[in-house]
Image 1 (tube, rainbow, N blue to C red):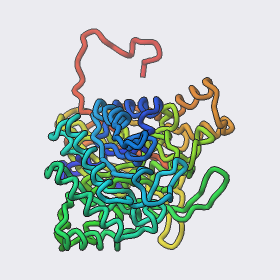
Image 2: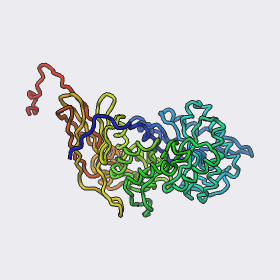
Image 3: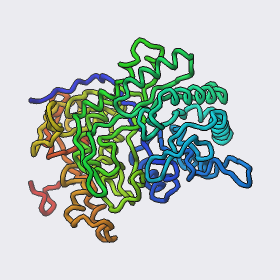
Length: 501
């Protein structure tokens, strides 16, 4: 069946999807991360970036010497300067707890972020106040007012907030939100940055904010779709729920807070991915890209900010990776090795802003100059009563596209699937070397490039018919450009050897 794409736009794509995570802030000082971020801005163009550990001790913000305490913004400035120079605005996640301010010793991750409440709330709010004033002094109030200030990370999970103590978090939020507004009433502050299945927390948070008449400029939550971890040495496997489960999580805050004072607040998904583990091989695959294509296409219409977690495999929550491919979250592997999900984002960056159609396997857009750009993906199989599974060997998509009064169009197609644009399968072919040689790395860089095809098609009735066959787990970008052939006197391709067709 051919799907007829309407000529009138139904919505705008917008920039909600142009947000990315970093791991922890200190990693933004690494050369590999800096080069990865520069590449991302060149090929994709993110607007916001978020990471943990702004106040972790490896950032050296809270210092003590000979009984004298001092705040040092040396590393913080270097990190944020780098973001700003690349055109990125930080989402300022306030956490984790500096050891000198902590009430306990519980930590999370290999790098031991302290997740206990402050021993003295005034010490904590003094830190927050001084940090925000420093940021305003350095970057200007007009700029910092665009930077969302997020209070903590996933306090409804006992690994990230001691005992997942809701009352203690609400006290932290109340004191922090007031401190933020005392610095500048126009700064954005929000929470509760809950992990999945945080409906009750979000509801209780809304009630707490309303009862205390507390500042709250946005609601932040996180979304993942994986099941329990099935551990292997240095890795895990997990089942996945269908992509609609992620889309439902994106809209959860608005459903839960409907009819409340917070119902109309911006909805920020400050973390999302398939698996919540940084050592799940699914992240390296074309399956991951095909899975997330409808999530990215549809989620951009239901949220105000949608931040993929994270940019690259410069990431150490479970320790230093032991292999080039290790199931890392990143869009990029180490040394800027592009993964299939990177290409999904790069394809999104080449779409137009006018949405003409959004279906279960396609997103058709138009640029301001009339060019069409569409994202297509193979829908993945699965059932409501079992694990989300694989897909057939191919998927056909037939579209009738409005192109206006032109005799023909030129089209360009970029393809990523199990063999094309897939460094992970090439790495398997090479025997899965943990640390590939320079020659093997070049092999992988070459294999990571999408397959590119091009051609022309006739226009009839100001429309063109496009018939696509997508291979297993394929995501592709097709750009369509109306053309009027120029006449060049004397040229005759049939006179070229090999061109007589």
